[in-house]
Length: 431
Ligand code: AMP
Ligand code: GLY
Image 1 (tube, protein in one colour):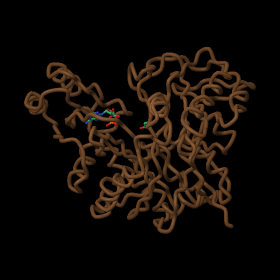
Image 2: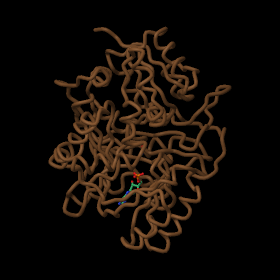
Image 3: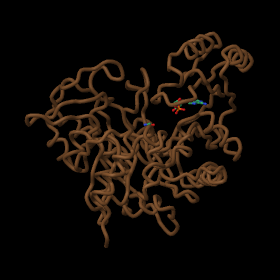
Image 4: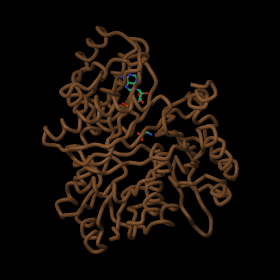
């Protein structure tokens, strides 16, 4: 079997989990990470090139005979890294800048959804403050206000009164999110249970990559400010096989076909944030042009297929005949963050017990923001570690993950103690 050298772009727990999966593949050659992090760089060779220097990255790929570039985060995609590298003949797993607008612009995403009859919240787009206010007065509250552009997952407000909504709007237009907030999408508030759904796409076709649920709020009981994600588990119990089929038919496939028809064929992971309403109907909240973090960590723990073969087939534009095999196990990931996150936090505090945590049966430690210096592991970021585990069911995965968390010695770190609560409650309730 030929082996493929791989360059992975990113520096978080998601990328560490991808590398872990890549390393299990019989077809992986040498693995490089740009820029990686302390933990990642134990498993992959660090590359020190600015991520915006596409020409230098292309030269590096030629020199190292890179057969595939995998792009973890959305920002380089929106900035066109896939376009630049593909122009040099390098296969990229990740969409073009135009296709990445599905995440980069909420207005674009909503236009595509409506044009291709995907069930989603009713909405309107505004660049004029007074018109936006008039719309909110007409629609009432609760209502959802979003920045059009990327705002690191923080550009969403869900005011519960009209008065609050008008105040929020003033703040958006006053530059709370810079220029990203001066074009807003205002949409209907949808009720139900959220789930994340992933598909891998080759430009014309899509394959289900399974489901997960994450916990965005910083505090137990889903309280406090939103973060990039404090934990996740897979599968999402709400996503039955029948529902998954509907999501593929009603949301993913029409969009992949639509994007091709728009001249922006979609290649890479299409991540749908879903709301499953009381009647059990799936509705689209938003799309992301990448794997979720920490959803990726739990998906990778369940993946049984050869990830290199799969992603390379997608990058090369032909996934026909491929399958995504996921184990029947459940996987759960607890994020450990520096105290203070998502606000201000200290860097450089020492983390001990990583080996003991990794030795808990079924558990794995993914590094999201660490540095290794003078024989010590130091925190180097807000979200610092992802402690993940597999189990026969979500309760077992949860028990193992927290056992590994408890093996760590990091007084300046914290985590939620209730990751997976909804799935565990459902399991105990017997449905
Ligand atoms: P987004 O950045 O679009 O994923 O939004 C962040 C979070 O806001 C989502 O995960 C939902 O919890 C919530 N949200 C966004 N849009 C809606 C909506 N139309 N109705 C209800 N909740 C929403
Ligand atoms: N965990 C949510 C995200 O990656 O967008």
